[in-house]
View 1 (cartoon, rainbow, N blue to C red):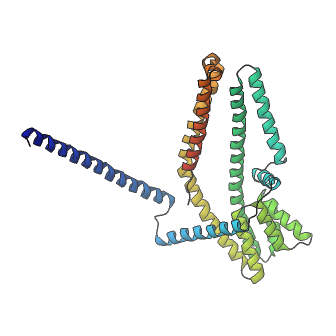
View 2 (cartoon, one colour; view 1 turned 90 degrees about the horizontal axis):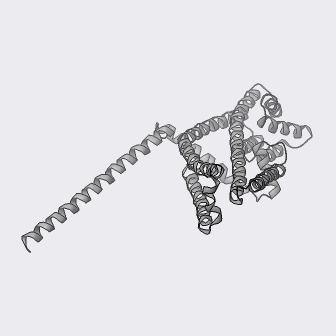
View 3 (cartoon, helix red, strand yellow; view 1 turned 90 degrees about the vertical axis):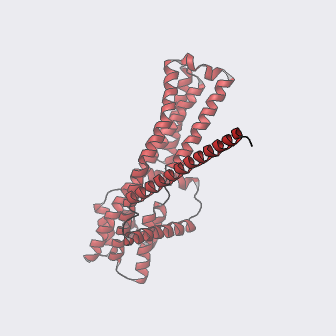
Length: 326
């Protein structure tokens, strides 16, 4: 081996060791940063408190998991009419769900036809109609989430009212009557229905189970199960309601922490999805001749189709990334 070859070999080995060292240092720095972020995330979510807090959190998860498992085991396949009725109840619509959905589809179709007749092209018309449907879906999801949060807050308050009424000597039906009078819709309406069915001579346990099945709420199912067991075997029902209220408050605090952590991700997702659509619509309105090539040529149509498919795939991926399973 010549001296030049030896020098080249030493240089190659030195470069390899240098690159490997740099790569190892980068990996170690990434692992340290990842561990710090994970520890900070757990701290913000309250998972790194004392041991008793950890055990309470694990117990809360176990109880909720068992409740969901029991509910899914007893669940049956819903018909289309039942799904529409559940959607109407969850969204708080006064009109039937079929009427609301058909009205929105009719408005979207009219907007699509009007856009085409104004000369903006059928692609823009389809985009406008789809935008109306997407906005309606987003508003409906927001209404459902708002009613779910309102139901949880009202249900916790109603459990406290029922516990105080039971300790004051009122019967269970009297406690439900107090809830229906002091709590507004939707919780007040549910307990009002239970009182009305009880006044008609129906069994109280059957009324509570029916309301829990139609409400599709895990907390209400837990409440119905606890009341049914206590009415059958006996016990202090007021303490059971206080325990349920404590569990619900702890879970609500955990859900709020999770929502705070994923709010930024959801905002970024909405901005990234909304900006291309708004820019596309503005270009079609301001400079339609600039976008005409996208509608008249085969390559332009392929690009529009690929863009729509990629945006839908990106929306699906970002939606998966913005959900935390716990």
